[in-house]
Amino acid sequence: MPKARQQALGTCIYNGVFMDEKQRMLCGQLYLANDEQLSAERLRAKKLCWQFNRSEPGSDEAQAILSKLLEHSPKPHIEAPFFCDYGYNIKTGINFYANHGCCILDCAEISIGDDVLLGPGVVIASPNHPLDEKQRRLGYEHAQSITIESGVWVGAQACICPGVHIGRGAVIAAGAVVTKNIKAHTLVAGCPAKFIRTIT
Image 1 (cartoon, rainbow, N blue to C red):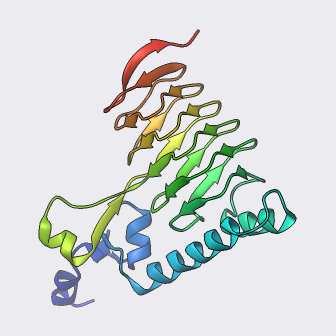
Image 2 (cartoon, helix red, strand yellow; image 1 turned 90 degrees about the vertical axis):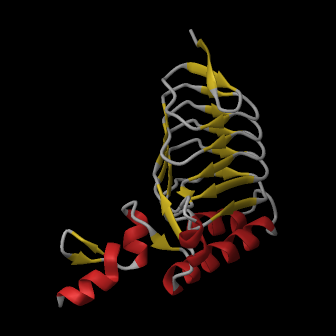
């Protein structure tokens, strides 16, 4: 590829290889969220969420829609309404439960272990916007993966921010905003979430 073309593409070149916007999104680079492919994939997910949210609770139809949307999640139990960006970046373990109004923005991988409970209104958000106004105006974003280990309980209206790792058996209090990693078997609360005590 000519050097002038590489310079024009800027961060589209990674280790000498051209990446499209989806590849850049998945590897944590700045990407254009209004890219045609990404826009189409988000629309697909929104349509499936719409279908799920209007299906009969507990029906085979509802479960079939979820299986199509969350292809890496074995029979999740999710209460409507539920919202996500893509679906294919959400990977849950067995016995996963999300209460009403859960929103998962999965621009990067969202890895969730077994026996995880999400209270109503929980937000798990992997994308972030640049501080630079011009980049935001152009539609640039970047995303960081989120890991929630097995046995975690996330209380109502809590928000899990990009790049966070929550250790096994931790409890996130209602309304907490988690901006940093949480150790296993700890209770955190507040905005931003802070250590309250160890769970014994």
